[in-house]
Image 1 (cartoon, rainbow, N blue to C red):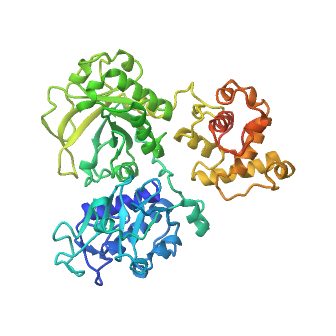
Image 2: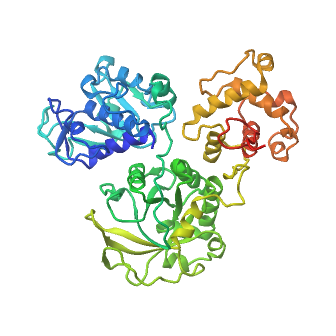
Image 3: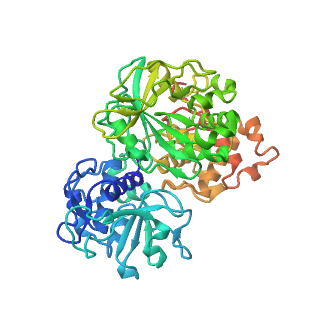
Length: 563
């Protein structure tokens, strides 16, 4: 889990689920003092805007980087308020991001986990909120005002609005133009400031997977969305959990990372699904893959095919599945009910992708605990891989209704859907990446793995690439092509790195310019045209080809440690 995702999930939980009221008195941090290791608060407590934001930052650093409680790298609540929070954030890996002053929005939009300040000493109102989703007009969570309209209130949210989540555009500070800065976590900045955590889990690195459950042919699981945000997925008895990730090309389940963390921490397997809507296949597939990229290689992926999406036909669904398979190296599946299954020709899809079927004779019946109803026969597939047999299931440790699912062939099929096909392997046994000249999530993952930074974020891999090129190209040539005898090891993509890599690629054996793949992007280029210090599709394609010909965790390109 990333620092930003933990911050956003914690803030949303405090504002919308936990019983947290508002107070600036001595009890302003009572929520933090009474929270457990995972951030849960089970009794009525209080917060103010700065204690909520600072505490969420602490949980982000603690969960993602393992920063111990009490360490100076955490944003100690008693020491910070809106007037000095800027300095505290910037000293802990949260630099200010550029603002568009005309609409008070960072360039490129907001990201979950951003901290937005309205500092009184900078012309603001003395307030702070936490961004809980990506976008130009995201939801923000905050501690707002006590039940009596003052800054001192009783424990717990008496009005339902003492802590709250609202749309950024409707916030009074947005409408009044009184926000003063936005701060976003940057793992390279944090590690530079606190080098003792350089080997901890950085931004975007998934939590290590627990051991898989015992092998079995039949397994039972649930599927959830934001509607089950209050559920403790670790406490609900199940073998697997399939989590809603996205819908259309603009909605992300704000609880998906928290839900995944709960399930994984309890030793369950996880999957993610995309709720399709009429629209662009490419946009929805890429949006889904970008959202679940941290879980590629650890989760199954599914297309939820219902509602108004069904009318787009089997061709749309098949194309989406094809694109997700190409981008992830996994084998996705499709979810649908009987009418959708019977209404179209699924012969092409069923030959390649498994079915998750919703329905059956007892679908509307209440189940208390797991059941074993008759398995329906679905057109084109026969017996489905997963059967969602009720929408009114009731399990221990959750008071609401749940969808209950039975997975057939669990031991042989689940992991095969996650892992790349055996024929699609690089020299080191991992999945090859598509040489398409696009820096997509599979390419970024392969880059980190080859450059010996699989457990770290991209800047660590870039630094290792610079180390390799310093050795492979050499100081004399580097001095001639970039005017320096060595590349900087700061983890930043620069024109110098591009130039050095392009020189190396042009001269490697066997030479990349003779490759048919490379010539798709630059068929007639000379060395001077290719070695230009600029990133483009030709350079990306060359790097992708090199990564496919490299061995994982070596920190070197075109190198086999067994040779």
